[in-house]
Structure formats: C-alpha cells, structure tokens
Length: 532
Image 1 (tube, rainbow, N blue to C red):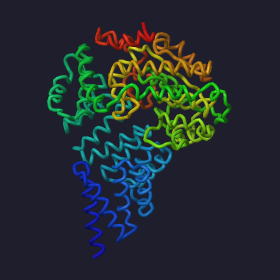
Image 2 (image 1 turned 120 degrees about the vertical axis):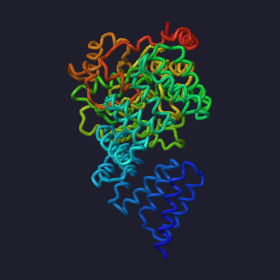
Image 3 (image 1 turned 180 degrees about the horizontal axis):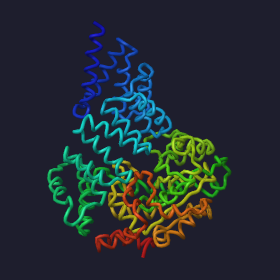
C-alpha cells in the first residue's frame, strides 16, 4: 500500500510542478505531495529533487542547491540531478563547483533532451559553447519541436561566430513559435538584413498582436529598430526604441535618483583617510580589469588583450561584487547598494582578494593573466585597489553621445536593475554624467595607477594604443593583438558580432545619423561640459 501511495504522490508532485507556469497553487500542491512522500520514504531521491526544483522556481537558490545535493546523495548515478545541481550552482556564480558537477553529469550521460539541454546551458554559462552546441543538437535530435532548445543552440552558435547557422536556428525558433520574442531581437543583432531582405513587415505584424506583454514588445521594438537601421530609416528606428523602452521604464518605476545615491556613497566612503589607510590586500598580478560604461569598447579591448599568448578572457564576471557582498553580509538582493558599500569599509580586504581569485579558478587557474571585463566593475575600482593592489585596471572612455545612444539601443539583461537607466535617453545622459564624475574621482584618488583608453583613439591608431595597453599590463608586444578579429574564442556580450570584424570606425559618430531627435540628450551633456 505504501509503495502504491508513494507512486501516486510522485506522479502528482511531477504533474503539479509541470503546471507551475499556469497554476499559481501548483508549487504549493507539488510541495505538499513531496512532503507526504518523504514521510513514507525519507530517502526518496526524487522527492528531494522535486523539492529542489520547487525552490529553484521560487528563486530560493541556496535551498535548491542543498535539496539537490541530498537527492544526489541518495542517487549519485542520476545525470539529471547532476545537471540541475550544476545549473543552480552556475546561477549563483559558484562556477568551480558547477564545472565539477557538470563533468560528472556528462560522464554519466543521458538520453533525455531536457537533461542534455540543461547541461548545454551550464556549459554555455561556463563559456564552453562548442561543447554546449553538441548537447543542444543532441537535445534537438530527440525533440526538434522545442523552441527553447533551438534558441539555446542559436545563442551558442552566435557566441562562437557561426552567424549563418545561428540565423537558421533563430528562424527555426520563430517558425516553431512566432511569439518567442527574444529570438526576434537576437536575430536582428546579427545585422544580416538589407533593404531588399529584412524582417520589418513580420515585426510590425507581430507588434499589432503583442498586447500587454511589455517584455515581448521591448524585444520586438529593439528588433524593429535594428531592421530600420539596416535600411537607413533612423527616425523610425528611434521611434521603435522609444516605444519599447518607455513602456519598460514605466513598468520599472525607475528614476535617476536610484543611481545617484550609489555614486554618492562611493565617493563619501572613499575619503582620503580611507584611501590612505593601509590594508593588506592579496598581491597577485593575475587579474586585468577592463571596465567602463557599457558599450564603450570593453569587449574590443578584451579581445585585443586575450589574443596575447599570456592572457585569457574570463568574460563578464560578477564574482568581485558577489564576494564583496558575502563578506559584508548585508541584507537585500542587490550585490552593490549603499549599505553594502558602507559596510565594506571594515571587511578583510586580503580575504576579498583571495576569495575573488578562488572563485575565478575555472578560467584563471592555469592562466598567467586573465581578464575580468564586467563593465560595471567601474563602481568597484576603490575596493579592487584595496583587495588586489597589483591588479591592472583599464578604463574605457567613449564619446558620450555615442555611448549613451548605444546604451539606449542595446537590450541588456532585462530586469537586471543596474541597467534600468538604459530605457531613457536622458537617463543615459545622467548616468554617463555620474560615471564621468566617478572616473575623475578614481583617477585623482589613484594617480598614475589606472589606464584610461579612449575608444576613438584606439580605432584611429590601433597599433599605437595597443602597444600602450600592453606596456601598462607589462606584456611584450605580439602582432596577434592587432589581428584580434581572428581570435576564435567565443564572445558572449552585446558586441559578439562587431568584434569578429577588423577594427573600424563604423560606430563612431553614429548619433549624428539621428538628426535633431537626440537634442535633449545632447543639451544635457553640453550643459555639463561632457561634449561639444
């Protein structure tokens, strides 16, 4: 009787979990079934696993990881458990553990399309897109009608630079589900449209039926803007962007004052007394931080430096901010907020440096130097100097009109609050103003220790500027750095298409194509002496 009851409860728990997207009570019902199962059989591995999936759905990451670990203890040969364990670990930036877990899952192997897709997602998060493609293809081979599998495949193909295959995969997603909105914006980012072959009509038709799906409209409007730009219709491109971005901003209820407090407390915290105070940091020359406003050329410098034989790219890591947050033990979901900044004054900065290096080991362990190119690390420069005094820090700067427009026309991680400013042109200008004042503050606080690279100078005189960058990083000249576009390594940022091309000036002065439409933003920047 007990075995039969467990089977019934197990089936019910699975069914309720599968209904979570459409039934608001489903997770609670699934949880109740799992609890009843464990009363009858405390060692029921799948009950623990299903509980971990419920926790994952509720964004209770620590709980999800611990429950998944218990499931593995009772069934260590289950590849599905290892796959989702690795996925949960990767979502909280525990990459070294995630890599160990996914290798175990890969070794066990699975015929389940969902498990193979999940393992592919983890590998893609670890930057191993070639291996991820193999798993996505394996998943699609079993379940060709799943648009999510096709989308994941397309993304990794794009990051690998295989734009033709990526285009085909995105089109397959759209054929399977035209309302898979992010596929439209991702496809448009490939910049493969022409005046005679574009997706404008298809996107306009979809916009008519998007309804109140704010994120869907955002994706479609960004896709439409890219298509209009490809045919030279810049006024229509800006109108599309303003339509999608304004609705997203309204949903977020964001104001620039939300960011002002963050910038202000950083400058208050780093008083001259605190800057001069001796802290025992972790003295390593391994990390090179490439940072600046998003869309200012950080990916370009990352590609140039990582073309050097002594340097590898670790991508855009959140590790430094995450480890800082852990040491401060401040409440809240934001990794960097005023309370965390204030609390960080009293942490052990050597421990911060050591923990950061340990967290990057999956990519940095065998590297002479590695690049952390998270642009928003510009907020962390003072803490980086305390924790890693010998680290190199390269700040990218770009014409404010170009960088503000580029932020406005780029879809960053939706609902990642640090990019909330990007949904309004004037907010972009205000954010740039705060950025510039903070950079002036850091450079005056750490004179001759930070390297500023101007994007326009790098484009105009690449060899001269690359030699300057390498000299600052204490690296010998290598011609491969000048031919960075031949670097076969994956690129998983918004610049994944551009950096596959030789250095060029096509994006310099882009803002001038929009005529008077950017006048309000320009007036603000001119008023604050940020541009002519």
